[in-house]
Amino acid sequence: MIIKSKNKQLDLTTPQVMGILNVTPDSFSDGGKFTTIERAVEQAEQMIRAGASIIDVGGESTRPGAPDVELEEELQRVIPIIQAIREKHDVWISIDTSKAEVMRQAVEAGADLINDVRALQEPGALEVAAQANVPICLMHMQGQPRTMQSNPTYNHVLDDIKHFLDERITACESAGISRDQLILDPGFGFGKTFPHNYHLLANLEELHKLGLPLLVGMSRKSMLFKLLEKSPSEVIGASIACATIAATKGAHIIRVHDVAETMDAVKIVSITAENK
Ligand code: 9MG
Image 1 (tube, rainbow, N blue to C red):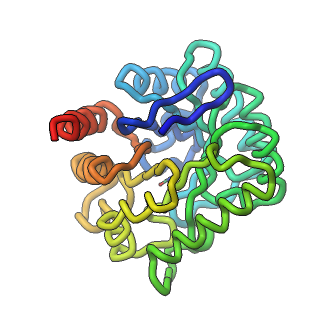
Image 2 (cartoon, rainbow, N blue to C red; image 1 turned 90 degrees about the horizontal axis):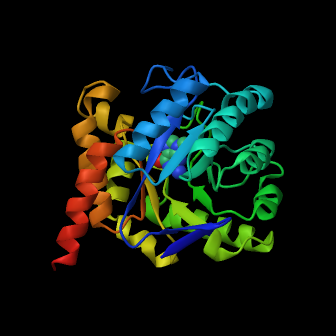
């Protein structure tokens, strides 16, 4: 599989690593360290050197309980950073947002991909994404970040997610977005209990039935650190284990904090697959 954006393309034959660049003061994993442009670019460069093919820039924290961010605030956080990375690097830049105006300005500033945890359900998002003509990651989330972990329930978690993603694919196509621009994500940790998350991981290959590239993100999430009774920064090994399982099950893009360590794991998975 290949995704194309603007004048570039990304081969997904082997799993690609997406590095997380949180530019929120309340970021759960880096303590909000990278809020200035220079430090954000430095962090992006470190991830590029380590092998990330996509940098995911986000200005709204989506961790459980996180507050909403005003449009102007989100724009001020992400647009200068996208411009600064784009000036110096050809790397794929992804904008992690649900707001139509942030999507529009981010793509204009140089973003190549839209990563929307709300799967283009916010007002105007479908229309802006169709105009932007870049790949879009549609993620499943039950509820909203503020409340999503209170009591998530499903008839059957995997079927419900497949059904949701299928409906969003149809909505995108109706809005004029081509199916081959879409990437799907089950949304680990977004309105899901431990059993939901681990059932999804154990059966990840089921999502290939939708016929589109799969993106997954489990890095430093509570499905790891709460289970292991550790802090987010103490679950790098567990994050790599999840990335390895996902890569083995055919995930195409893996969204992580720890790019170098994940790259090593993905390379081992790829070389093992080549020697089958
Ligand atoms: C922004 N964000 C946080 N976690 C994520 C995940 O698992 N997938 C995607 N696509 N985005 C995420």
